[in-house]
Length: 85
Image (cartoon, rainbow, N blue to C red):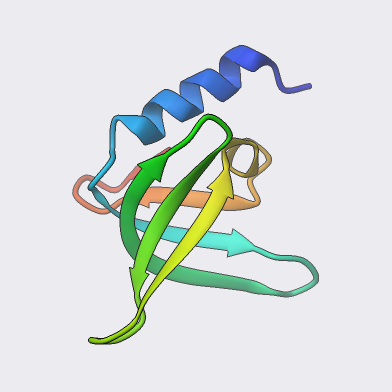
């Protein structure tokens, strides 16, 4: 069972790293996963967004919930010190 305190700890950890470069590994269902590198852009009460450069002209904004991190559907690693949230 995941409690509200655990969600708040994850939110604070993400919030303290706004603007930092991160590596994401996201599981999106049956054998569908991706690894991307981007920057934590914004933090909201239920979600956070990561901006990913596709190429020189295109930027993609991905959104994830804090619950995704707690359930290990998304792994977030801070690039500067290889710290996992």
